[in-house]
Image 1 (cartoon, rainbow, N blue to C red):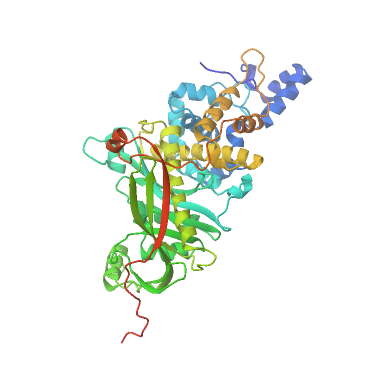
Image 2: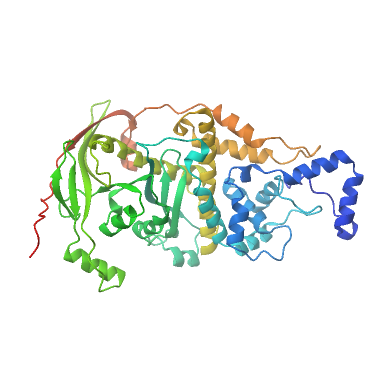
Length: 498
């Protein structure tokens, strides 16, 4: 069903602006005032974004929207966001919803375009504008939303990677790659996420065969002083460690357990059981790095001091089943009194928040087993950026409401917030009979979010990680025991080499 905006009238004879304005004046001061207010009003989708990010992004990433005065660049952005907000809707339904939103300043008499027109407009918009909108919106810190959840004065973030399936065609398969024969093409995303609010701070998009590490290198600019970043063991390399810590951000990255798997040697053991270690690039490591970089004359990386926290964590379920895992966390936090080994071991569990963000993105926002719509590499990436943006807008709405109420954003259910945003956007369309819209959608949304039932805090549960385990193991309450242990590293010899 196509919904006609209240600010849209049938085309006037001659299509002359002076004639249109005269006709509106003749309609009476009440209608004229309502029309002006409607033009200046901001829709909910724009209100959930950082200030003026769409206009700023379109100025920085100019597009080819010169031919169509209705489906211009901004309107195309809104349509793409609506399509990602309602992933099961067809283009005609998406257009009807988008053109029913307030604040778009459509010219009187403008009709709703058709699905093929949106397809063409998406091609003209391209990837860069949507990517830039995401970057500008993601740059807004949690503190601006009223969230002051810090760990010892540091904002905690995490990096990791995930994938999303695409439509079946040879062009996408050739561009992004497939995990197996006859499988769908797969797009890979490496993310940098704030663990307190699940809001993205940066992302890099590539193909299935682009490694997470290579994409993670593109996230270096999102690191800055005041951040503490957590990462799984696959991300560590000495070169990456030096570059990322050089941004001023603090790091707490898991490393492999083998003594020869990382270039570490113990300098001395600290009172809390952690160790000061020296990172040293061996001849073999330098040879591989020179080959990978294509620079046969690259200098050896400088010896770098860090701190290693080694611990075991034992998970015991209510039924008595226990599992012990050994972990090693390498960190730039050298002060063992300000940042104890036990505190760092407990903090590392926050890294799992990024897995929850991926679950929200793939299962809740996009929908389970739903491939992206884009049938070209550019449109697939455009849609991926838009999905990340919808996820961030939802997390931002939850964080803003939590900040206003002084509560932890983690207790607000993400799925319910997304449902509220969808219903509020749908409700922004004008009444078919009187043309009126609901007022203050953002205020109404915040109130509805705070009225939601909240997650239980402090609850610890575990379940099987694989499908086979989940078929035989029920989710159970679990308790964790952490014990700081010594590493198996060799000692660092500080004597001069001859």
